[in-house]
Length: 394
Image (cartoon, rainbow, N blue to C red; front, side, top):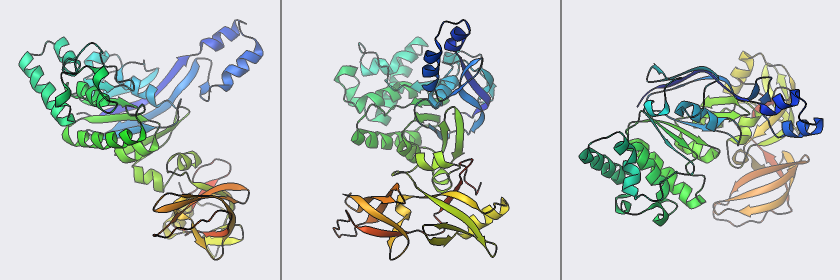
């Protein structure tokens, strides 16, 4: 277990296409098509995969890097592992600068998306391999492998080869191979992405149990916000190489820093309305579709502290925070999805798609085709700048 400090870390991949363009090897339209594929910043040096940032990961913390494909999360993980060179900045593990330290000497272990198990070896030999390379005594290898197998409940599979394992057993073996080394830092790169929904739910629970039983700092990469919310002590939301927000799962859910975070975290995603933020007698209200809602006290205080003026805004309200009312925002239900304990109503409101979650409370009701009015409370309303897309409270 160890503290991991990423200080002013940045990663730039050499842009061979741009160099070729300077030599006149690409036609103009090919250049434009190539650059449209890349959302990351392109400079004279190359493609900036990870923008400069600092992140302090506490000893024994479970931190999750989350974001869409191509946001830089796996690149960040690979820099910690030593599999990618750091363009600029410093990386410290347990207080030691490790920029130029070989991966094998960083006292870290990594679980890959593909698991990378040796197909010709048994589960036991897969887990023992790294210890054999280090010439650890046989009795100690046996003890460590069997301890890890017991923690992961795979003792009965030690004599099997990977091809004889189920989809849920392979990630356990990959995790076992990592933890037998008792690493200071355990890196996990989307280890559940190849599993079906039921197995993913099961394995999330297994990872939580694993974390409780071993004293290791975890850095976990995923594009699945449910994994991020359920596993992480803190989550780091990334987009296009930039860190958008760092916080506990509840902080990021309740107080999203910008429009991207608010839409990425939460299922179904947040609904958005065109609205106006106004002040009446020194109090902030949000107005949309003929209704006016006074914001909650904590929101009032933050907006006042930021000296926010009246302006047109993007109003965000999560599906579970909208309710059916006698008057309010008008909309029509297009589709009604019965989910058991609740209905997901897909509506058209002010020309936009909106989802509202309505508890069934033991009653079966088909809302399809109905005209409804929606309301919300001032403590669940989020106001975002139309210009910067930032949450005006922060």
